[in-house]
Length: 197
Length: 101
Image (tube, rainbow over all chains, first blue to last red; front, side, top):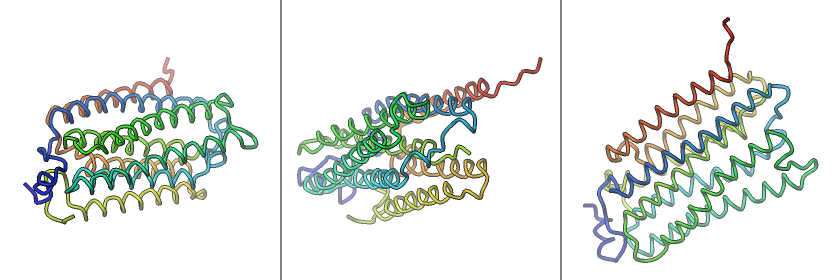
């Protein structure tokens, strides 16, 4: 066992587990697999609607969406995956809490960025409401679905801030958090970046 | 933190930092490719799809450690992958249906 894990045991930090993560990880993988199908279904629906609409009808995402805030949100999620991994490997409770707080802050920053973006789109001129057109509807549904996942992750990470948490629980939460990061990647690429024409 | 060889909790810190830097670089590439309006739409979408697959692959490999997971988890992933592939093919077939008769 590594020095880090030994220190963790001595200092009351997370207890080590095997690399597989145990039964909890298998359960989480199964859940993530079904959840991935949910994201996949939404993105396929977006793709089908976009293809059906045709090149001239579908709006260019760059004309409607601000890329800079979305890119900043993407970087925040990337960094949060790193801080989450470092939290699972922290030697002491204090270090683990620090990395978890960093993860929490980045998750909240992502949600704040999303709320800012929604406010900007809804209050802009012309405003892009949920029922403005198919692009708007699918945009809000897909990004809102993902934001709910981030929110759930933020709640889970908040629970992990408690001192006595088994390593397996932390690693299972980390698995979920990384999935939320991975799920954002196709959303960012397909909805924000793929050109309509 | 140490940079020891892989521990039970995953790869050492330096490779993780490198992966995050690579992911950030790939995201920057996506932004650049997306803005290349001189290139054709199909070329840009193909490049963006490639970059997307690279990014998701990196997260699955280094953060989620899909390869190190239990056999049951891998089988679950495989089953879902096959199901998703079939679903995509069926939906694309619906979208691009060609009437041959």
